[in-house]
Length: 193
Image (cartoon, rainbow, N blue to C red):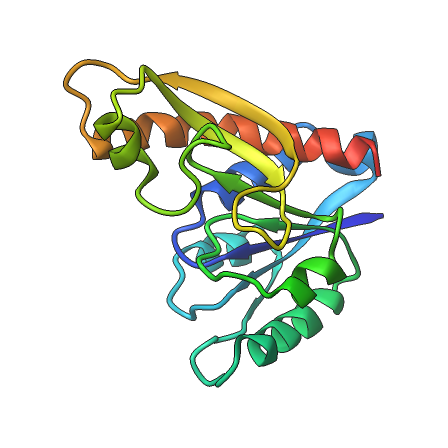
């Protein structure tokens, strides 16, 4: 079985979209894969309740007690590895991971970013796209590498920027596409594992 571990820091809407798609599309039978666990760096992450309701294993590895990123990443890797993951999926996980952590899961670590990479890596993507006068925004699923938001692209979704869009309005429209894009990209990667 190709086990999937999802990392979240907040509400987990992308995680929920992935879990629902896995059930609806019967990834277990079709791809030999299933979501096994959801891990968060925040005990108050809203997505943990949804994961528990779905019968998934959940765990919290709080980053705050760790003096060094490497120490947190080692503890996080220990929690992840208990589930023998074929794929580790970042779904709103708001921590920058160390190169050692990224190397440990090389080729098996995915992220979704709310822009059409390579444009607008990092934060405030919607504000930046609007300020630059872009006509399109979107989302990108990519393999995670040591360089932030620069890994090989798996798939993208394009969203028009409409006259009068605010960052919040654009973000909501992009998020709707993320919920379709991420499960599709994960299924594509799983089919090739």
